[in-house]
Amino acid sequence: MAVKIRLTRRGRKKKAMFDVIVADAKSPRDGRLIEKLGTYNPLTNPATILIDEDKTLDWLLKGAQPTDTARRILSYKGIMLKKHLQVGVLKGAITQEQADKKFEDWLKGKEAAISSKVDSLAKKKAAEEKARLDAEKKVKEAKAEALKQKLAAMEAVEEVAEAETEAEPIEETVAEEVANDTATAETAGAEEPVAEVVEETAEVVKESAEVVEEATEVVEEIADVVEEATEEVEETAAEVEEIAEEAAPVEETNTEEPEAEAEKEPEEEKESASNEEEKEDKK
Image (cartoon, rainbow, N blue to C red; front, side, top):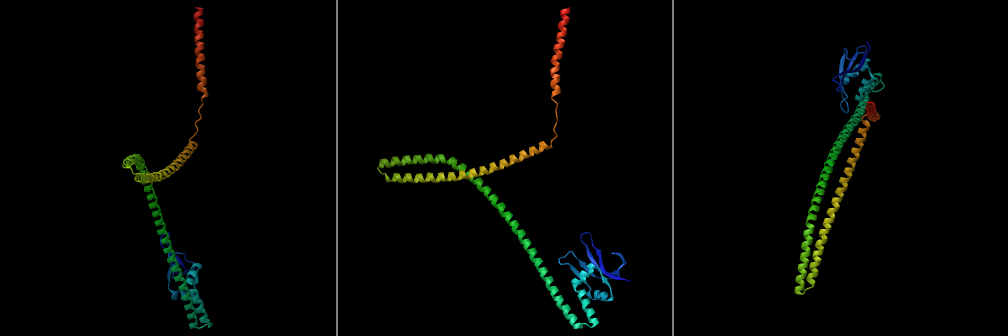
């Protein structure tokens, strides 16, 4: 009887697990088995393999033939290497101590490779998580900055409105103060205080004018943004109308027949009127 070491499937859809079994080569995949050697879970990274190495090695030495997939699993666990070394011991090519030492050296290298892979996967996962958090943080900061700019623009508009309403009273009061101070200085006979007052009022007017100018620039920028948005909305509406016109069925109307009928009606009336006049003349 030909014996195979192969896999048998179990588990639900997309969550498959496999058992490593010994079975007759003629039996179906999920048919009768001789012995179960272990399990294989490909859903983890790296894959989880739990197998009885002594039993598997015993079946290999007895002549059991693994399938391609089972052979890769056994090679991953070092069972095929162990079988090769054991055959050499049985043939007298090497001693048992030499075979054990070679297997231990291979096992150390394999464990180091597996541990490095696990570490790299953990680092990769941590880096991806950090990148995701950084991206979320940037999005939140961008939203906060946009909200801040919007509030600043609204405050600038309010300041411009307030400045425009307050500009005229300030100019009037400044002019009155200058006139009063000038009259007072002229009566007192002092020229220097008048010049100082004039300079101070001029500086105040200049500062208020600068504030009004800055606020006006902010308002103009906001108006430009609103105008661009309006143009984009109009373009989008025009495109939608074009698409709707192309999609709507074209109704063909024939306007010639009603006109012809309208022309015929007066002619018929004229003919009837002429016939009546002829009858009256005959009478």
